[in-house]
Image 1 (cartoon, rainbow, N blue to C red):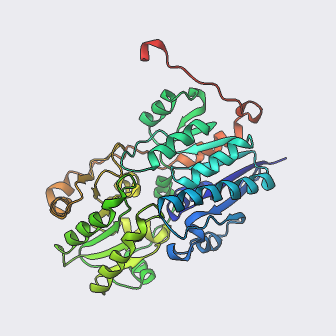
Image 2 (cartoon, rainbow, N blue to C red; image 1 turned 135 degrees about the horizontal axis):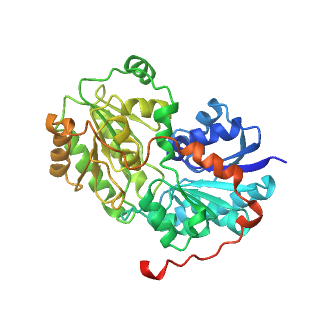
Length: 390
């Protein structure tokens, strides 16, 4: 009987990172893909991106609606409970041999909880990382302790997962799966991208994605206003903005972005979701990526775009030399953008190295998913570091 691999996706972001793994599982003759779609994918406000998954030709085994009508903390906690219930029902019906979970959102914690209680082994991608400015920090490490296999994006993260008591033989450094697009995804040319977007790019272009720093949600709107004020210092730039995730505080940002795009129609373009192909193609065309998304830290350096990383949402993650950190004030953001555009800074990036790998994560993960012994995988033992390491 074919080994059944369930993959859970809840946002446009994690779907883009999981795309080639989903693709290869779907194409495999010895593995059965069970794709479970939940979270933001099913919400029109965030682009109803389940449509993109269907257009990509992947069969959806289950849809789990978790009622994302609000991003207040109580509502997110309630959605987490609904996700646990819905995903538990999906796992009970589909009976997967392994559940694959990426990242650190509350939907993924729900998936891990539901799978763990049903004794379904969990493979976790992107564990061991640190994001000190976000609730994701706690979710990620909790998922690590529930997971049975670990696919980390870099060696320091592999060591951290082992430090958390996970057996070394179950922790695999594979690189960041989002970088597989470098080798495998034919990107749009500038002309094709402009036609797809429906507007021309300029000589200077910015790609902006700003999420609330969820451990400081009261400042989300204030920080967003500072960002928008900073963008006004570059009236020559064409700006493409994508909406924030469904995190606490995110909905307070959306009206600010909508109003800003309305005031600068023709120069500023707001999209709920660009889709993976257009997003990656834009990374090759823009002069600077601005905001606090993990994509600016992990993917953007490999596509040649400098990143202005605002605030502490991504504090603790490994960084390439192309990432410029700045405080969430308009003056600091302006200074960082100007630095990113300077000839000296850009010249220094010609020999940049991305610490997240070279774009071959999917093949490494597929090999483990095929070969791991399911009979022994469910039982976890706590690994104590050797005494000389303590």
